[in-house]
Amino acid sequence: MSVIDFAGQSSGAALLARGREECEEAEILLSELLKKAGVVAKGPLYRDPEISGISFDSRSVKPGDLFVGLPGRNFDGGAFAIEAIERGAMAVIVEPSAVEGLAGVRDVVVIGHDAPNRMLLADLALGFYGDVSSQLALIGVTGTNGKTTVTHLIAYICSQLGRQSSVIGTLNGERTTPESAEIFSRLRNARETGDLIVAMEVSSIALDQERVRNLHFRASVFMNLSPDHLDYHGSMAAYFAAKARLFTPQYSSVGIINRDSAYGKALLGGATISTMGFGIDDVGDVVTRSGVTSFSYHGARISTSLFGRHNIYNLLGAIESARQLGFGLSDIAEVLPRFGGVPGRLERVNPGALPAAYVDYAHSPDALEQVIAALGGIKGATARIIVVFGAGGNRDRSKRALMGAVVSANADYAIVTNDNPRDEDPEAIAASVVAGFASGQSDFGYEVIYDRAAAIARAIELARDIDIILVAGKGHETYQQIGSITTHFSDQETLAGLLGLDLPEQQ
Image 1 (cartoon, helix red, strand yellow):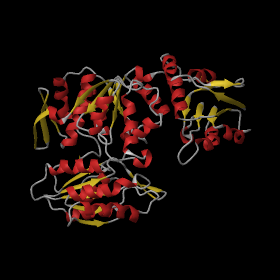
Image 2 (image 1 turned 90 degrees about the vertical axis):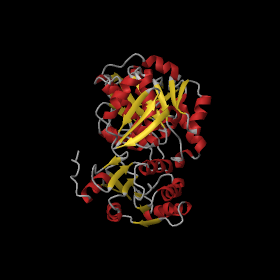
Image 3 (image 1 turned 30 degrees about the horizontal axis):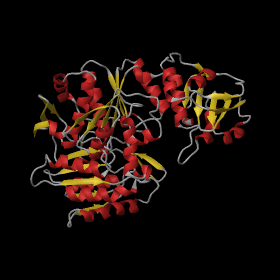
Image 4 (image 1 turned 60 degrees about the vertical axis):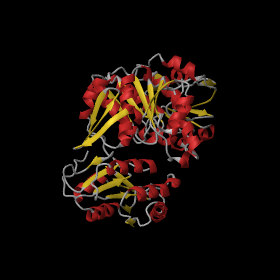
């Protein structure tokens, strides 16, 4: 076993210059990878294995991988180095304090590094995979709400118009924005399977944690900013500062920015890259009829099955992204009517049947307000909107009462239930949500039913044919976590079963 101490890393610019030489082989010598990543060794490298991949999660290590033990908020990744070695890692990078405990495990290279952090992981990813973001058109989308819909719209438009495209985001990964090694791997796979464009959701936490380091976006979209993730960022100022990093030359060439957001205006006024703004004033003659919304935009008529003011913003962000990639507005308008929506985003579970039942991922005050407003625009004058929702445990507690206030101010009745309470007391979570009802309608009606399936059943029992049921918070998710137990749970499947519809096929 070899133990090497490392110190010093070169600048990001130099790394990018080296990264432009693609790493086409499936394997690379450890010494060459370390050189490409700008890591300087103290002492000789007694063994120089070929590395066939980079992993930061011991559970996903494959034979031949380099394992990087990242320090975390709850766990130190270095503590899982033995598991990584047992799974076939040829080399591991851990903090110096963890090196001694790995003596004699087996003949692998154990690297003690003072900072086995996400910057290092991203530099190793660049060294191994090459500068993959320069080999296709990468579009970043950020904002508290709308990222998933906008990225899917972009990929749909571009694919329909002849340039194969894909998405990296909430619907196809464990995280909204994966760790850098996973992003680089997925981008190279996308390029090798023929994708010319990738639309990627970029979260504030990912920006703060350097997960998109060494990537460059052809264009980046800013949708909005409202209270969320404050348990992580601590303040709206810090939250915005993390988002704003995406709109700097380090990351993006062009910024496409919602100027109707106060934070968007701030970006437009202070960005150090080329920017263009979009807003609701650019839209005219909005009509929603028979499940189709249409509006005029710069001389084109846009028609879509999406509805609600928030989806107009989503469409504008996607349209302007496609235009930045060279597509004409008339061509974009021609393909948009065929876009079928995104799973768990104002998804109608029972088209053509009554009462109308929708599932949406809304789990922040602003998202709930936007979605309820969208449903309010299509309901009858005497119809009610019945909302089933909760709040996630071990997450931002400051938004719970605000969510309650939004629902009581905009809906007609609520059933508060479990979302993913995780390690928190469900009763305490529900009490925080209910406390916000006092800020809305004084006579607002609600009940608390902790069992989510029972809560959905109660909403169906209460609803008349003219009413609308909204089950919010989980959207596309197919699990529920209560304490340490995670079980299968789908709002769509539950609604379909209770409404007597055919259940979706299990994947």
